[in-house]
Image (cartoon, rainbow, N blue to C red; front, side):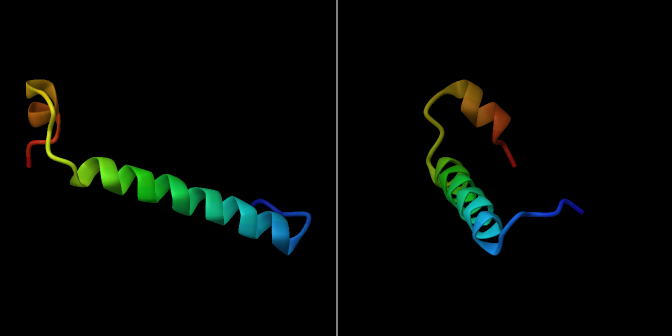
Length: 43
């Protein structure tokens, strides 16, 4: 497990990951815009 210099550094890293996950979730919630997206995201 990686060590961190400060709790603030760890919090900053986690918050940036949360933002990245939120962005990815929004992309996945959106309707496919092309045939390629329909194929890639087909369940």
